Image (cartoon, rainbow, N blue to C red):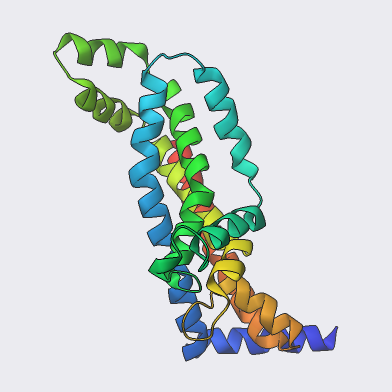
Length: 228
């Protein structure tokens, strides 16, 4: 018990003194996860809106498939992206394996179903009168999508926050695609796993405290947006 307590105190010291390695790993984690969610949102939100606003054969089955992919195992995504980015894969010539860009691609694939599905759910809650009013005023499809997304903006922002939390906390894609390379692809989750296996509890606890702190901020922000 004393060892754990000393580890916690050392972890707090590392954070309070702004340890360069801790700051570097945290900044890289935030950048990669933010980039992945930004790209996923740019694709997933309009796509979710199109699926919700259009009627087509197999729509219900497609929505069910998207919702099933919410719990897509990170190691499965990591394996898929690894095969695509490896030298023998279709994108091997781009040399994106074991790079931050490759990690962004993997995390983007991981969170895209969440953003698409939650966008569909958010837009379902918009009053049909909003849609009818926009159409009666002569709005085209793109204007209609923007109007409905604006009406459901707090729910959509909540979906983005959920996606960001999923990307930040995953470890499978980060480990398999990034390779946990020091000063290049090492992020919070992979570093915690490494430091724990090496017996460096102080560093792993410091990074764990930061990860928990970020998660708390995300949850508080999510509660605020859901309340609105």
